[in-house]
Length: 323
Image (cartoon, rainbow, N blue to C red; front, side, top):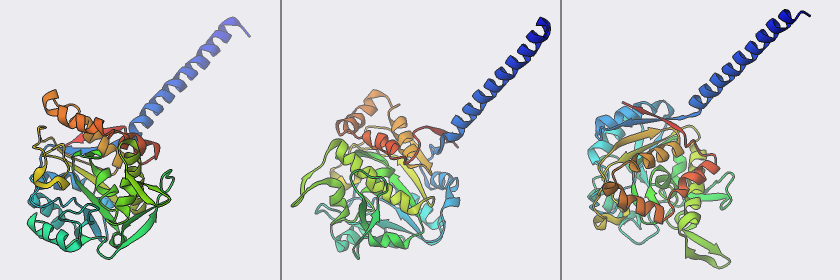
Protein backbone atom coordinates (compact mmCIF):
# COMPACT_ATOMS: atom_id res chain seq x y z
CA UNK A 1 0.00 0.00 0.00
CA UNK A 2 1.32 3.46 -0.91
CA UNK A 3 2.20 5.74 1.97
CA UNK A 4 -0.28 8.36 0.74
CA UNK A 5 -3.08 5.80 0.60
CA UNK A 6 -2.11 4.48 4.03
CA UNK A 7 -2.10 7.97 5.58
CA UNK A 8 -5.39 8.85 3.88
CA UNK A 9 -7.09 5.68 5.10
CA UNK A 10 -5.54 6.14 8.53
CA UNK A 11 -6.83 9.70 8.68
CA UNK A 12 -10.30 8.50 7.71
CA UNK A 13 -10.12 5.77 10.33
CA UNK A 14 -8.89 8.16 13.00
CA UNK A 15 -11.52 10.63 11.97
CA UNK A 16 -14.08 7.89 12.37
CA UNK A 17 -12.73 7.12 15.82
CA UNK A 18 -12.82 10.81 16.72
CA UNK A 19 -16.35 11.16 15.46
CA UNK A 20 -17.29 7.98 17.28
CA UNK A 21 -15.69 9.24 20.50
CA UNK A 22 -17.36 12.62 20.11
CA UNK A 23 -20.65 10.89 19.54
CA UNK A 24 -20.02 8.84 22.65
CA UNK A 25 -19.32 11.98 24.67
CA UNK A 26 -22.51 13.55 23.37
CA UNK A 27 -24.47 10.40 24.16
CA UNK A 28 -22.93 10.28 27.64
CA UNK A 29 -23.76 13.94 28.19
CA UNK A 30 -27.30 13.37 26.97
CA UNK A 31 -27.61 10.32 29.20
CA UNK A 32 -26.31 12.30 32.18
CA UNK A 33 -28.81 15.06 31.48
CA UNK A 34 -31.58 12.54 31.00
CA UNK A 35 -30.71 10.80 34.26
CA UNK A 36 -31.30 13.96 36.28
CA UNK A 37 -34.62 13.99 38.07
CA UNK A 38 -36.99 16.87 37.46
CA UNK A 39 -37.85 19.09 40.41
CA UNK A 40 -40.46 21.77 39.77
CA UNK A 41 -40.22 25.03 41.69
CA UNK A 42 -42.35 28.11 42.25
CA UNK A 43 -41.75 31.06 44.54
CA UNK A 44 -45.51 31.53 44.78
CA UNK A 45 -46.50 30.07 48.14
CA UNK A 46 -50.25 30.10 47.60
CA UNK A 47 -53.05 27.85 46.44
CA UNK A 48 -52.35 28.86 42.86
CA UNK A 49 -48.64 28.12 43.18
CA UNK A 50 -49.31 24.77 44.78
CA UNK A 51 -51.76 23.81 42.05
CA UNK A 52 -49.27 24.77 39.33
CA UNK A 53 -46.52 22.49 40.62
CA UNK A 54 -49.03 19.74 41.33
CA UNK A 55 -50.27 19.92 37.73
CA UNK A 56 -46.77 18.98 36.51
CA UNK A 57 -47.05 15.63 38.30
CA UNK A 58 -50.78 14.98 38.53
CA UNK A 59 -50.88 12.36 35.78
CA UNK A 60 -49.44 9.89 38.28
CA UNK A 61 -52.30 10.36 40.71
CA UNK A 62 -55.55 8.44 40.26
CA UNK A 63 -58.08 6.30 42.10
CA UNK A 64 -58.56 6.89 45.80
CA UNK A 65 -55.99 9.49 46.85
CA UNK A 66 -54.33 10.03 50.24
CA UNK A 67 -52.90 13.51 50.85
CA UNK A 68 -50.32 12.96 53.60
CA UNK A 69 -50.18 16.07 55.74
CA UNK A 70 -48.57 16.77 59.13
CA UNK A 71 -51.54 18.06 61.13
CA UNK A 72 -49.40 19.63 63.89
CA UNK A 73 -50.09 20.14 67.56
CA UNK A 74 -52.88 22.58 68.51
CA UNK A 75 -52.45 26.19 67.34
CA UNK A 76 -48.99 25.57 65.91
CA UNK A 77 -47.85 28.87 64.38
CA UNK A 78 -45.97 27.42 61.41
CA UNK A 79 -48.31 24.81 59.91
CA UNK A 80 -49.24 25.07 56.25
CA UNK A 81 -51.98 27.59 55.37
CA UNK A 82 -55.35 25.86 55.45
CA UNK A 83 -56.71 27.61 52.36
CA UNK A 84 -53.68 26.53 50.33
CA UNK A 85 -54.15 22.89 51.35
CA UNK A 86 -57.90 23.15 50.76
CA UNK A 87 -57.29 24.43 47.21
CA UNK A 88 -55.21 21.34 46.45
CA UNK A 89 -57.54 18.83 48.09
CA UNK A 90 -60.58 20.19 46.26
CA UNK A 91 -58.75 19.89 42.94
CA UNK A 92 -57.98 16.18 43.45
CA UNK A 93 -61.00 13.91 42.93
CA UNK A 94 -61.67 11.19 45.51
CA UNK A 95 -59.05 12.55 47.91
CA UNK A 96 -58.80 13.16 51.63
CA UNK A 97 -56.15 14.14 54.17
CA UNK A 98 -54.46 11.29 56.02
CA UNK A 99 -52.51 11.15 59.28
CA UNK A 100 -51.54 8.75 62.07
CA UNK A 101 -51.51 9.11 65.83
CA UNK A 102 -48.33 9.97 67.72
CA UNK A 103 -46.00 7.87 69.84
CA UNK A 104 -45.57 10.65 72.41
CA UNK A 105 -48.46 11.59 74.72
CA UNK A 106 -49.52 14.91 73.24
CA UNK A 107 -52.77 16.12 71.72
CA UNK A 108 -52.62 13.62 68.85
CA UNK A 109 -51.86 10.51 70.92
CA UNK A 110 -55.41 9.13 70.81
CA UNK A 111 -57.75 9.27 67.85
CA UNK A 112 -60.28 11.33 69.83
CA UNK A 113 -57.66 13.91 70.85
CA UNK A 114 -56.25 13.94 67.33
CA UNK A 115 -59.66 14.70 65.85
CA UNK A 116 -60.10 17.58 68.27
CA UNK A 117 -56.69 18.93 67.22
CA UNK A 118 -57.70 18.63 63.56
CA UNK A 119 -60.66 20.93 64.27
CA UNK A 120 -58.54 23.41 66.22
CA UNK A 121 -55.99 23.61 63.41
CA UNK A 122 -58.59 23.95 60.68
CA UNK A 123 -58.20 20.58 58.99
CA UNK A 124 -61.94 19.94 59.03
CA UNK A 125 -62.79 21.19 55.53
CA UNK A 126 -62.71 17.60 54.22
CA UNK A 127 -62.57 14.05 55.60
CA UNK A 128 -59.37 13.19 57.49
CA UNK A 129 -58.44 9.52 57.77
CA UNK A 130 -56.48 8.64 60.91
CA UNK A 131 -54.86 5.67 59.22
CA UNK A 132 -54.06 3.74 62.41
CA UNK A 133 -57.46 4.32 64.02
CA UNK A 134 -58.30 0.64 63.47
CA UNK A 135 -54.82 -0.76 63.95
CA UNK A 136 -51.77 -1.47 61.84
CA UNK A 137 -50.45 -3.78 59.15
CA UNK A 138 -46.92 -4.84 58.21
CA UNK A 139 -45.61 -4.05 54.72
CA UNK A 140 -42.24 -5.19 53.33
CA UNK A 141 -39.01 -3.20 53.44
CA UNK A 142 -37.07 -4.32 50.37
CA UNK A 143 -33.30 -4.42 50.77
CA UNK A 144 -33.25 -3.00 54.29
CA UNK A 145 -30.41 -3.73 56.68
CA UNK A 146 -32.41 -2.73 59.77
CA UNK A 147 -35.93 -3.89 58.86
CA UNK A 148 -37.58 -6.55 56.76
CA UNK A 149 -41.01 -5.01 57.31
CA UNK A 150 -42.57 -1.87 58.73
CA UNK A 151 -45.79 -1.33 60.67
CA UNK A 152 -48.06 1.29 59.10
CA UNK A 153 -51.60 2.47 59.68
CA UNK A 154 -53.96 -0.19 58.35
CA UNK A 155 -56.06 2.33 56.40
CA UNK A 156 -53.10 3.18 54.16
CA UNK A 157 -53.98 0.09 52.14
CA UNK A 158 -57.27 1.73 51.17
CA UNK A 159 -55.51 4.17 48.83
CA UNK A 160 -54.34 3.86 45.24
CA UNK A 161 -52.16 6.99 45.21
CA UNK A 162 -50.46 9.31 47.67
CA UNK A 163 -49.62 13.01 47.50
CA UNK A 164 -46.98 13.76 50.14
CA UNK A 165 -47.58 17.41 51.08
CA UNK A 166 -44.85 18.51 53.47
CA UNK A 167 -44.03 21.61 55.46
CA UNK A 168 -40.23 21.58 55.16
CA UNK A 169 -38.56 22.69 58.41
CA UNK A 170 -36.13 21.66 61.12
CA UNK A 171 -36.72 18.72 63.41
CA UNK A 172 -35.57 17.96 66.96
CA UNK A 173 -34.42 14.40 66.17
CA UNK A 174 -34.20 14.24 62.39
CA UNK A 175 -32.38 17.55 61.91
CA UNK A 176 -34.84 18.43 59.20
CA UNK A 177 -38.28 17.25 58.23
CA UNK A 178 -38.89 16.91 54.52
CA UNK A 179 -40.93 14.49 52.44
CA UNK A 180 -38.94 11.53 53.76
CA UNK A 181 -39.80 12.27 57.38
CA UNK A 182 -43.44 12.99 56.52
CA UNK A 183 -44.00 9.43 55.34
CA UNK A 184 -41.35 7.57 57.35
CA UNK A 185 -42.83 8.69 60.67
CA UNK A 186 -46.18 9.96 59.45
CA UNK A 187 -47.42 6.70 57.90
CA UNK A 188 -46.03 4.46 60.65
CA UNK A 189 -48.71 3.75 63.25
CA UNK A 190 -48.36 5.29 66.69
CA UNK A 191 -48.03 2.25 68.99
CA UNK A 192 -45.77 0.02 66.84
CA UNK A 193 -44.30 1.55 63.69
CA UNK A 194 -43.16 4.81 65.22
CA UNK A 195 -41.50 2.91 68.05
CA UNK A 196 -39.72 0.66 65.53
CA UNK A 197 -38.24 3.72 63.82
CA UNK A 198 -37.36 5.68 66.97
CA UNK A 199 -35.99 3.04 69.32
CA UNK A 200 -33.33 0.34 69.45
CA UNK A 201 -34.61 -3.14 70.18
CA UNK A 202 -33.04 -5.76 72.43
CA UNK A 203 -34.26 -9.17 73.64
CA UNK A 204 -36.62 -7.59 76.16
CA UNK A 205 -38.14 -4.94 73.89
CA UNK A 206 -37.26 -1.38 72.91
CA UNK A 207 -34.35 -0.33 75.06
CA UNK A 208 -33.24 3.18 74.05
CA UNK A 209 -34.17 6.05 71.78
CA UNK A 210 -31.98 6.30 68.71
CA UNK A 211 -30.17 9.42 67.56
CA UNK A 212 -27.99 10.42 64.67
CA UNK A 213 -27.25 8.11 61.76
CA UNK A 214 -29.06 5.01 63.11
CA UNK A 215 -32.27 7.01 63.42
CA UNK A 216 -31.86 8.51 59.93
CA UNK A 217 -31.32 5.06 58.44
CA UNK A 218 -34.42 3.73 60.19
CA UNK A 219 -36.45 6.60 58.75
CA UNK A 220 -35.15 5.92 55.27
CA UNK A 221 -36.07 2.24 55.43
CA UNK A 222 -39.53 3.07 56.77
CA UNK A 223 -40.06 5.53 53.91
CA UNK A 224 -38.84 2.98 51.39
CA UNK A 225 -41.65 0.64 52.42
CA UNK A 226 -44.20 3.38 51.66
CA UNK A 227 -42.59 4.39 48.34
CA UNK A 228 -42.38 0.77 47.17
CA UNK A 229 -45.99 0.19 48.20
CA UNK A 230 -47.33 2.99 45.99
CA UNK A 231 -44.74 2.40 43.24
CA UNK A 232 -45.19 5.16 40.63
CA UNK A 233 -48.40 6.52 42.12
CA UNK A 234 -46.77 8.77 44.71
CA UNK A 235 -45.50 12.35 44.40
CA UNK A 236 -43.68 14.67 46.81
CA UNK A 237 -44.26 18.38 47.47
CA UNK A 238 -42.16 20.41 49.93
CA UNK A 239 -43.34 23.86 51.03
CA UNK A 240 -40.35 25.93 52.21
CA UNK A 241 -42.22 28.37 54.42
CA UNK A 242 -42.01 29.32 58.13
CA UNK A 243 -38.93 27.12 58.46
CA UNK A 244 -38.43 26.98 62.21
CA UNK A 245 -35.74 24.71 63.61
CA UNK A 246 -38.62 22.88 65.27
CA UNK A 247 -41.20 20.50 63.82
CA UNK A 248 -44.91 21.31 63.87
CA UNK A 249 -45.17 18.69 66.62
CA UNK A 250 -43.64 21.37 68.90
CA UNK A 251 -46.87 23.35 68.62
CA UNK A 252 -46.87 26.82 70.16
CA UNK A 253 -43.41 26.25 71.67
CA UNK A 254 -41.74 26.09 68.23
CA UNK A 255 -38.86 28.54 67.78
CA UNK A 256 -39.65 31.52 65.52
CA UNK A 257 -38.29 31.05 61.98
CA UNK A 258 -35.20 33.06 61.04
CA UNK A 259 -35.03 31.87 57.42
CA UNK A 260 -37.04 33.59 54.72
CA UNK A 261 -39.80 31.77 52.85
CA UNK A 262 -38.41 30.26 49.64
CA UNK A 263 -41.18 28.56 47.67
CA UNK A 264 -42.62 25.18 46.76
CA UNK A 265 -40.69 22.22 45.32
CA UNK A 266 -42.31 19.15 43.76
CA UNK A 267 -41.04 15.93 42.20
CA UNK A 268 -41.79 12.28 41.58
CA UNK A 269 -38.34 11.61 43.12
CA UNK A 270 -38.18 11.60 46.93
CA UNK A 271 -34.42 12.03 47.17
CA UNK A 272 -34.36 14.79 44.56
CA UNK A 273 -37.04 16.90 46.25
CA UNK A 274 -35.42 16.69 49.70
CA UNK A 275 -31.95 17.27 48.24
CA UNK A 276 -33.18 20.31 46.31
CA UNK A 277 -34.81 21.65 49.48
CA UNK A 278 -31.57 21.30 51.46
CA UNK A 279 -29.55 22.87 48.63
CA UNK A 280 -31.91 25.84 48.49
CA UNK A 281 -31.81 26.34 52.26
CA UNK A 282 -28.01 26.08 52.33
CA UNK A 283 -27.77 29.00 49.90
CA UNK A 284 -29.37 31.37 52.43
CA UNK A 285 -27.26 34.11 54.04
CA UNK A 286 -25.47 32.99 57.20
CA UNK A 287 -27.76 34.94 59.53
CA UNK A 288 -30.78 33.07 58.18
CA UNK A 289 -29.07 29.71 57.68
CA UNK A 290 -27.12 29.36 60.93
CA UNK A 291 -29.78 27.92 63.24
CA UNK A 292 -31.26 25.55 60.66
CA UNK A 293 -27.85 24.31 59.57
CA UNK A 294 -26.78 23.74 63.16
CA UNK A 295 -29.96 21.80 63.84
CA UNK A 296 -29.55 19.67 60.71
CA UNK A 297 -25.87 18.88 61.11
CA UNK A 298 -25.84 18.42 64.91
CA UNK A 299 -28.39 15.63 64.41
CA UNK A 300 -26.53 14.20 61.39
CA UNK A 301 -29.66 14.87 59.36
CA UNK A 302 -27.88 14.80 56.01
CA UNK A 303 -27.57 11.04 56.46
CA UNK A 304 -31.18 10.92 55.29
CA UNK A 305 -29.98 11.93 51.84
CA UNK A 306 -26.89 9.73 51.58
CA UNK A 307 -28.72 6.64 52.82
CA UNK A 308 -31.57 7.23 50.38
CA UNK A 309 -28.90 7.21 47.68
CA UNK A 310 -27.49 3.94 49.00
CA UNK A 311 -30.98 2.44 49.09
CA UNK A 312 -31.54 3.52 45.47
CA UNK A 313 -34.57 5.57 46.44
CA UNK A 314 -33.97 8.36 43.96
CA UNK A 315 -31.43 10.64 42.38
CA UNK A 316 -29.42 13.33 44.13
CA UNK A 317 -28.79 14.92 40.73
CA UNK A 318 -31.75 16.99 39.60
CA UNK A 319 -32.86 19.63 37.15
CA UNK A 320 -34.65 22.55 38.81
CA UNK A 321 -37.50 23.76 36.61
CA UNK A 322 -38.81 27.17 37.72
CA UNK A 323 -42.19 28.45 36.63
